[in-house]
Every structure is written in C-alpha cells, then in structure tokens.
Length: 215
Image 1 (cartoon, helix red, strand yellow):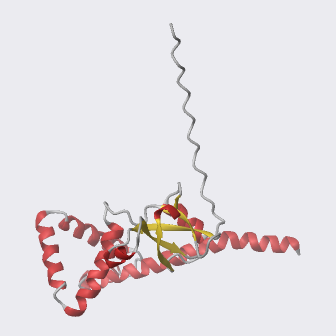
Image 2 (cartoon, helix red, strand yellow; image 1 turned 90 degrees about the vertical axis):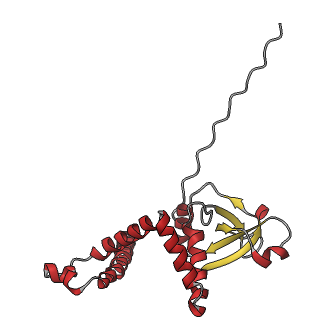
Image 3 (cartoon, helix red, strand yellow; image 1 turned 30 degrees about the vertical axis):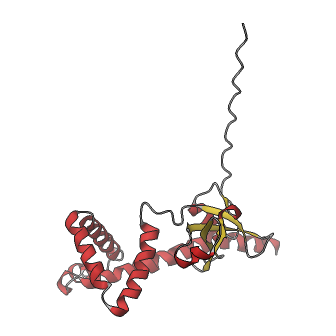
C-alpha cells in the first residue's frame, strides 16, 4: 500500500504540471487562432490546405503586433496613434474604458516604467506575517496628498492564482527589497513556497588595503 501511494504521488508530480501546461498552451493557441477570422474566406488556411493547422493564428497575431509596432515607431505612425487616441477620448463611453486600459498598458509595457520590476517582502495581512509583493509605482493624485512620507504602491499576489490579489500602499521603509527577479517571486508564490529561488551569491569581501609603512 505504501508503494502504491508513493507511485501515485510520483505520477501526479510528473503528469499534473505537464497536463496543466498543455491545457494552458491549448487555450492560448485556440484563442489566438481566432485572429484568422479577420482574413477573407478565400485566404483561410483551412480552405487552402484542406485541413486545420493549429497555431497559424499565433503567427498571424505575432505578425500583426510586430507590424503595428513598426508603424507606431516612426513619425507618421506616432501621429496616427495620437490622432486615434484623441478620437477615442472624445467618445463618451469608450474614453473611460480606453483611457484606463491605456494607462495600465503604458505602465506595464513601457520600457522606461518600473512596474512589476521589483519584488519586496512585506508584513501582510498583519504584523508578524510576511509575504511577497511587487512594487507597481508610487501613489498619485489626491491619494498622495493624504499620505505623509515616502510611500510605494505594491501588488500582493495570491496563491495559487497570482492574477487575483490586493493593491496596497505602504511606507517604503516597510518594504524589504529582495534579490530575486519578478519571475522567481511569482514562481515562489504560485508554488506555495515549494519552488524556492536560489540564494543570491555572497559578495566577496574586499581585501583590506595595508597601511603604508612609515619611513
């Protein structure tokens, strides 16, 4: 009986991550394959080849993202983006949704942004209990007028689903910066502490400079 239980858990440890990974990949591929619907019916790969080839929508989506990025990187493209932004901000219902989503995307994907680039250790949800959080920026707007001192905005991911979490504002002095990447911190949280990041290498001590001999 003990051997059967050991084999059962060993099999789950192998098959569970593999099955979940395949399920997530299948969901992503099937979702991105919907981009093929923007093509004319005569250009659909299913019609041209006679059978369905999964993953072609991923290539099409990647091509569209690269094309839009290339266009938006030049002078004319930037002007078109500014014109489309101004147009969308004039539509009553759309502007509230678009402006909020754009602010979040600019914060997350901007190369000069600092969102989700620093993992910290904080006391949460009460003193004496510690968890890992990610710095998302600094408080702004009228919130900053009511916070005295140096505060940071942090996101506290939950286990095992890090997309559901808490947004809190803490004093910077109450956050301990960790020497681990955001990916390592998220893996640590998702795995419920099972996947422990490697300890940072110790900085070698600098040899003492001998004092000059008096002559």
